[in-house]
Image (cartoon, rainbow, N blue to C red; front, side, top):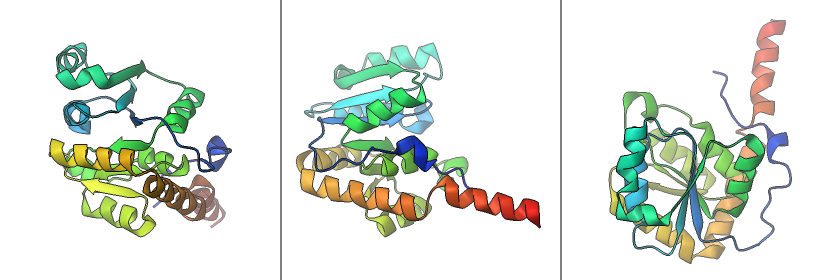
Length: 197
């Protein structure tokens, strides 16, 4: 299997170097219900944190519906961003969310956004699918939650926001693991080997 992991050169110079980031968490990608939109917005309701949403809404109806939620006052919607703008979002966030629903497509997937959060040196808050849980636990790079449980997501966000030392350690662990294992430089060698076979 050749995996769609991040290109290391896209994330050069993103090491945090111990700086305390802003009270922001982010989600970067297609904005849909089954990717956890409503739970993420409900989870930041009442917290001293901003949720940065970057990407395109699946439909205008979903956008209008989520804008009615009280948690949306804590949302910064950035729209569809280019790669450099995504770097900017990741560099100011304390955590990256990838709380996708447990659909057959997602439970055995490898979401590139999770590895981009890791290489950007921010903790991940990910769905507790066994496949993902094993990656996060092995790397010690974040927290896994039930993606359908708003209170679990809220508690994970609150923990990371309030524990900068632990969050920084998680971020450093994740970055190190992507550099060592989860990157395109390693994956492309599989293709080259296949071509040369």
